[in-house]
Every structure is written in C-alpha cells, then in structure tokens.
Length: 272
Ligand SMILES: CCCCCCC/C=C/C(=O)SCCNC(=O)CCNC(=O)[C@H](O)C(C)(C)COP(=O)(O)OP(=O)(O)OC[C@H]1O[C@@H](n2cnc3c(N)ncnc32)[C@H](O)[C@@H]1OP(=O)(O)O
Ligand SMILES: NC(=O)C1=CN([C@@H]2O[C@H](COP(=O)(O)OP(=O)(O)OC[C@H]3O[C@@H](n4cnc5c(N)ncnc54)[C@H](OP(=O)(O)O)[C@@H]3O)[C@@H](O)[C@H]2O)C=CC1
Image 1 (cartoon, protein in one colour):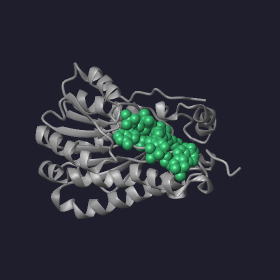
Image 2: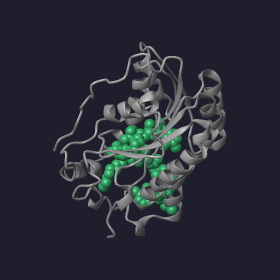
Image 3: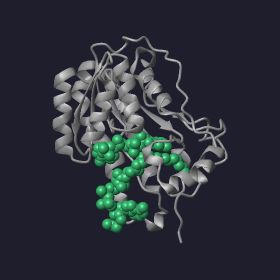
Image 4: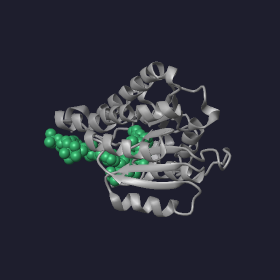
C-alpha cells in the first residue's frame, strides 16, 4: 500500500492572490483545509464554511502567520438561508474571486439499501447545496471575474459500486458546472470540477475505509493515493491566471485511477 503525503513543488508566485477573496466549504478538515491554507499562503483572504466551529478554529490557527487571512462561519451548507447570508457577508468583506465547493460526502451502500431519505440527503449535500452556494456567490464572482472549483470524485462517468447516490450527485454537479460555464462565460466566470482519486483524510478513516485502502491503491495505476496538497495546488492553479481559459472541465487528479482496472468496481457495500 502506498499512502501519499506528496507535496508538490510550489509553482505559483507567493503573492499571486494578494487582495483577492475566496470561500471554501468544508475548510475545517482534509482537502478543504489544505485548499484554504494554500490559498492563504498565496495571499488570499479566505472564509471557511463548515458545521464544526472547533475544526474551523484549528484551520484559523494554522493560517495565523500566513500572508493571507482566514475567517470562518459555522453553518450547514444544506441550510440555504444561512448559506446565502454567510456568502453575502464574506463577499461584502473581501469579495469572492474563488468559490470552492468542497463540503460533501456520503455513505457506502448498494442501491437496494439506500432509502429515499438517504438518497435525498446525499443529493442535497453534494448537488443542491453546490447549486445554492454557486448561485449565491454569483454577483461577487461576476464583480471579480472569478472562478469556481467543485470538488468531485474521479471516475464518475463509469459509475462506482456502492456510491449510486454520490455518483449521481457529482454527475449532476458536472452538468451544472458545464452549463454555468456557458451561461456565465460572458461574465468572465470560469467553473471547473476536480476529481481526486483516493485521498486519506478523516473522511476515509473508519474501519471499513481502512480495509478498502489496499484495494484502492492497487487499482490506481500510479500506485499511490492523492495527497491533499496536490488537490490544493491544482485548485490554486485553476484560480490563477494560468487557468484563464480553462472552464467547464472535469480534471481527474487520481494517478489514472479512472482509466485503470477498476477503483469503481471495489464494492463498498453489499446487497446481503
Ligand atoms: C470505491 C471508490 C472509492 C473512491 C473513493 C471515494 C472516497 C470518498 C471519500 C469521501 O467522500 S470523504 C468524506 C467522507 N465523509 C462523509 O462521507 C460523511 C458525510 N456524511 C454525511 O454528511 C451524512 O451522513 C449524510 C450522508 C449527508 C446524511 O446526513 P443526514 O444528517 O441527512 O443523515 P441522517 O438523517 O443520519 O440519515 C439520512 C438517511 O440516510 C440513511 N443512511 C445513513 N447512513 C447510511 C448507511 N450507511 N447505509 C444506508 N443508509 C444510510 C439513514 O438511514 C437515513 O435514512 P432513513 O433510514 O431515515 O430512511
Ligand atoms: N477522501 C477522499 O478519498 C475523497 C474525497 N472527495 C471529496 O472531497 C471532499 C472533502 O472530503 P475530505 O476532505 O476527504 O473529507 P472530510 O470528511 O475531511 O471533509 C468533509 C468536509 O465537509 C464538511 N461538511 C460536510 N457536510 C457538511 C455540511 N452539511 N455543511 C457544511 N460542511 C459540511 C465537513 O465539515 P463539518 O463536519 O465540520 O461540517 C468537512 O470539513 C468531499 O466532497 C469528498 O466527498 C472526493 C474524492 C476522494
């Protein structure tokens, strides 16, 4: 098994985001925290969203000496009213040059074991909340000619055992991303999806996930997991002038897992 803590060589100028603002959901842990910290290191004023105030506070402590800044709002992204109000506060404070819709997750279960309520919960978190956040950030993104990065999964085009709800939601996000890339191109707003492969975070730390890890790595042609820093660097790249003509894309950062023998065939649930 090869779990990666690979840290990419920085490729962006240290002050590239000075004077710019971002919102990152799920910034209190894992991928979202790594993205928030990288943006702060590059001079961005970042607002983090998440339900757990203590986790967001830890991110704020880690960002304390960085050139940018980190403030946060403890909220549930599924609460549209709270989301709209927090987005407006952040936008009014420092503008929104970048929105990162990272908060998300699901449970592994075969479709026969997913109740309608379970389906609705996963769709609400991983699709509808992304729509709400993006729509509510629109005036600020337009003013800044900004960018949106939606954190998705790799391999959503070929399905994934045990993830019917989540793959359907992420495919919906890709459709939304491409449609808004067309509708908002005239405003100078760009939207892209990033599809990480397996990333070892708290979200993948339960016993079932740990047991799957060897198989997940074995099904990844490049033979290792994706590090949170790699996802963060690519997010920053997409927000930078280097990504100026990139929009409507799903970029899979997964060591070719989506092409390989079958991350998607590893069964996280069982019909029994
Ligand atoms: C093989 C390829 C692998 C590629 C790697 C993929 C790696 C992906 C990793 C990650 O995504 S990391 C992030 C991980 N973190 C999480 O996933 C946690 C996220 N979970 C949640 O936020 C919530 O659990 C939820 C899924 C959004 C549901 O929230 P809600 O508060 O609405 O839930 P509940 O009210 O508790 O339950 C609603 C409904 O769902 C049913 N349910 C919950 N868990 C299961 C389960 N394990 N199996 C079946 N059903 C489940 C629950 O029973 C409720 O339905 P009813 O029973 O009331 O009908
Ligand atoms: N780890 C992996 O292998 C992969 C992960 N992903 C995706 O990357 C994203 C980040 O996952 P990862 O960092 O691994 O896992 P984490 O569980 O560490 O991160 C999920 C984050 O989302 C936040 N969140 C979840 N639900 C809500 C909600 N209703 N309202 C507000 N915030 C919420 C959580 O904060 P809080 O609990 O405080 O609300 C948490 O910070 C997710 O969308 C995940 O599906 C994609 C591919 C692979």
